[in-house]
Length: 288
Image (cartoon, rainbow, N blue to C red; front, side, top):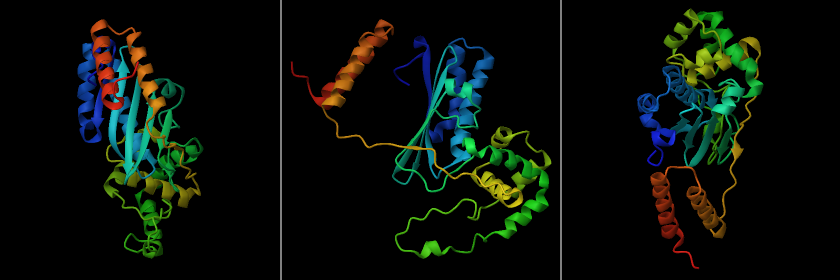
């Protein structure tokens, strides 16, 4: 965010997830300063909100988002980087406007999901094989609140303990289609009264969170026999070797790229100085 300014034609907004409510204002200010049309500004704000809702609610992999960063250019090309955490594990979600132009934002829209590990169960509504789950999650709302309440009463009560909880040192992951979920009936009542037109509309409705979507998945399974895939799409990250000569060479390659870039001279000199300072600090002065 410090290195790129509107003068470069590319800017970065966002940061830690607790500051996500500032992102629309950041987009407003920077995009307007860059002379972007109002329609593009509103589109960027909608993309920011949609990507956060997809990774935080529709991709139910057990990771909680803590970083949301968006970069966009004056031509309205954009990329989003989000990071989630689960205990000591981390997961990276990457988005790009090119990929989003080719697919719907709720149908495997990611450029990449990179993780420390894969979950045994991942209720991913955006998985390409879960198209029927997305459709059925909207359709069950037409069954009415009474029938949904009967589904909620038919599975294991939340107060009933699982035997897995008494197995020592077992970090058990439970099937999301059989595990009890706390239902917000006020939200469901509103959805049944005004049924969304499609899954994307459902996801973006105010109040729709992880528990609401999971309950609708349970209803689709019980009422329509829809069995979604619970495959985790994440690519497991190979741990890098300790920093060595290759890493140092990459830093010098980056320095060369900056020197021959088309950035304006002041910005290029600033970045060159910062990278040179990092190399000297981390690796020590290079021997001739």
